[in-house]
Image 1 (cartoon, one colour):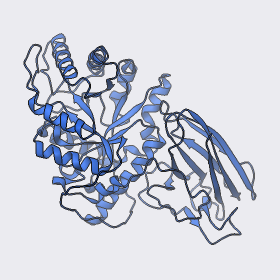
Image 2: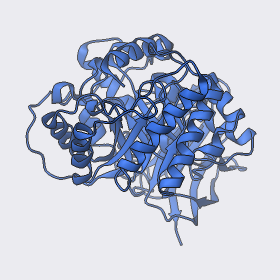
Image 3: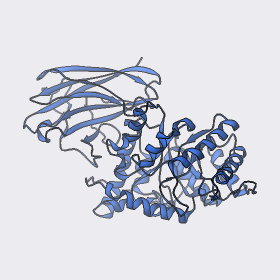
Image 4: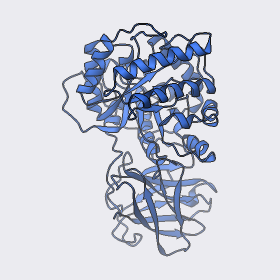
Amino acid sequence: MKFSQKLQHLAQKYSLLQAHKFSRIFTSLLVTSTLFYTLPARSQTSYLGINNGTGYNTDPTFTDRSIQQTKDLGIQLVRMGMDGVYGNREGASFNWSARDIVVNKYIQAGLRIHSTISPRHHVDRDSNYEQWKANYRYFVRNVMERYKGKIFYYIINNEPELDFGKGTMTAQQCVDMTRIAYETAKSIDPNIKIESPPPTSPSSYILKEMIDLGIDKVTDFIGIHAYGGQIREGEFGNPWRLLAARNIRKPVVVSESGTISSWYQGSSTERENYRKRWFVIFGQQLKRYGYNHALFFDLDNHGEWAISPNFNPTATYYQIQDLRLNKKFSNPGFELANNADNEWVHFDNDDVRLGASPNVAFICGDPNGARGGNCYARLDSGRASRGKQIFIRRILGDVPKNRNIKIGAWVYVNGGATATLKALGYDYLDGDAEISKTASQKNVWQYLEITVPISRYWAVVELGTSGTGNSGDYVKWDDVSVVTP
């Protein structure tokens, strides 16, 4: 979309999301901005991507700099609007020259394009509905034929419940336009994938309406956007619950995601650290809910949203660069120091915590308290209010696809506490699914084991308990195991 439209979009988004601020404090070192320079090649992941300004800014130098930083981040997906090619009415001419250059640069760099093709911003919204659809069909077919073999993924529309100066769209209009794109894509190349119009949040009213009208039948992926507190436990799983209630199994994706430092309190350094910590939790939540892939917003050009404004990296830029969402499982007995960014991450209840939980401790130097070795994880149920969920989670990366794995752990339950071992995120067509086993013994080490069918290449293991409010109640976890065939 055009920059002026995006500015309006951001103002609306800010109003919608202000209620989703986080209040937890997490302090860490701010990495200072650096000048742009030639960067070494990095291993790329097709699980993550980013939005940038090459939809409306096709300047070759700008595109080159965007590509270089995208590759430096280690991500492979780029979102690009199909702006500036004209063809906005049935029979109108196109001008492909500038867009061709951008597309070819991305392809040569080994990046995968996710292109937005909008029935509001790219074609005339004729007052005659049939003509509007004809305009869109004409635009879509020409774009897909032009970039056949180069672009294999299209996003239909953008946040249809917002106006952007072009009017909102109804759920039925979204389904109709998505059907046009889907049927056109499959007639040109069955390998082209379609993402349904992503709403402003996982709990947007229009998402439910589109699903009720059968959007799943004319799309390959259900798209959403997720900002700020929308990734909290529960809300981020809303798309899955909507689908499961209608017996629909469909992958869900995030095509915009992020937060801004002004939503937090403290010094500029503290606010940026809250922001970068958000991306750590976001990575965990993506895997926990089995999302197919996700794109961040924004690389370089949208004020506070930019992680590298004018190509000057922020601390958040480096945090994204350091995300390790496919890390192999290690340190099963907690004998090594825990990295809370990409190993065992703390959660309390449905809050997306920005820091360590006071109810979680990794104890070392206590061979009498451990099952084996000298260390273990302790969750203090008694310090938390009754019913408050306390747990630590870890992504199990690089596990075999379409296989069953066994996840086991030893647990010691004291007093009135309870303990449950869970597997999450293992079914990418039902992100809210879980497999669990609860301890049945007290004051003795008990082994819990669950068998988990892996649909992609990961699962998330959770070691948890509930608050009792009774001083002295606690749970100890030790010797976690992951057995693959």
